Each structure stands twice: as structure tokens, then as C-alpha cells.
Image (tube, helix red, strand yellow):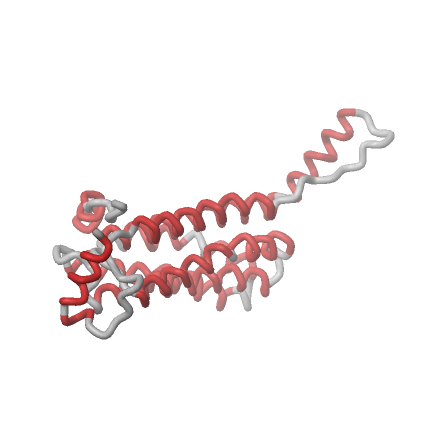
Length: 239
């Protein structure tokens, strides 16, 4: 079978001796299918963290009900913003995850478990978002959300560094691309770590610094590296 041939080829490589071969290989189909499913499910569950406003209708005219509903919706601006931001952040982490796997040629047990640790953090995002929506002006809730982004950035960087050092990447990965993927993890984690520090002074200021994540990721991407990533082939999903 193709899977057995892949395992045999990998075990012949001295860099791979002494590892667990039961889940080693080169076909990322099942890994990416599970990963994409977790990302998609977490995005969907985020909507559950939003509650429909309840306004009293008894004895009120339609214009009065409309005004009351409008005020209630305005009062929910914080949770709605939090939902949108969390949705975008999960999308950002999915892009990061997908780009990393574009450069992987093979995997082993440790890489699979590092990937699992990323997925468990994505899966818990709706719960963290629910806490944030209920207490968006409370430091502990803001720091909880920011802390999750810090660990996600570090774990994604760990996956890349592990693959880089263990020879799991494609042979044609440019060195500037490898450096960018490491730098990207540090940048995103640093922004949210700084926001945790700022939260001791201003909770609102801490949340505003999160926007810097997108600028950090965008402006840390050199044009040449961006072109290389865009032109890189998709990961192997063949059965």
C-alpha cells in the first residue's frame, strides 16, 4: 500500500530512525481534514456566544419597541465586535496553519501532537469568546482571550520550528521563508502579550492594541516571501 511505502521510505532515512512509524507519512489528507473541520466548527460555534436582545413589548407601540430594540443592539456592540474579531482571528490562524502545511513534506508522531495542541486551542475559542462577551470590560476576561492568542502564536511557531529542525519540510524551502514563519509567530504572540501588560492600566487600551496584530503580520511579510508563499503548492492530500 502507498502508506506502507511512505513509512518504509521514511524509516530508511537516518533522521527518522527511532521514531514511531504508526502515524508517520507524507499524505496530509486526514490531518488537514480534521484540522479544517475543527476550524470550521469553531467559527460556527462562535455565533452561539451572541444572545438575542430581549425587550419588553407589553403595552408598547411598535415605534417604542423599535427604539428599545435599537438601544439594546447598541448595548451589544461590544459582544458583536468581539464575535467579529474572534471570527477573523480564527480565520487568521487557519491561514497560518494552511501556509505552514504548504511547506511540509512529511510528518511524524510529535508533529501530529503539536498540531493537536493547536486544534484544542481553536476548539476552546468559542468558550473563551463567551467569557469575553459576558465580561468584555473586565481585565480577567480580556487577558484570557489575549492569553489564548499568545499560546496559539507560540504553538504555531513550535510546529514550524520542529518541522524545520527535524527535516520535515520540503527540500526547496527558501531560508527567508523559514525565517519569516518563525518571526511571524513571535510578532503575533508579542502583540497580545503586550496587551496583557497594558490591561493593568487600561482594559480598553489593551483591546485596541489587538488591531496591531494584522499590521504586524502584514508588514513583517517581505514582498519576495509573499510571492514565494502564493506560488507554493498545496499540501499533499492524496488518499
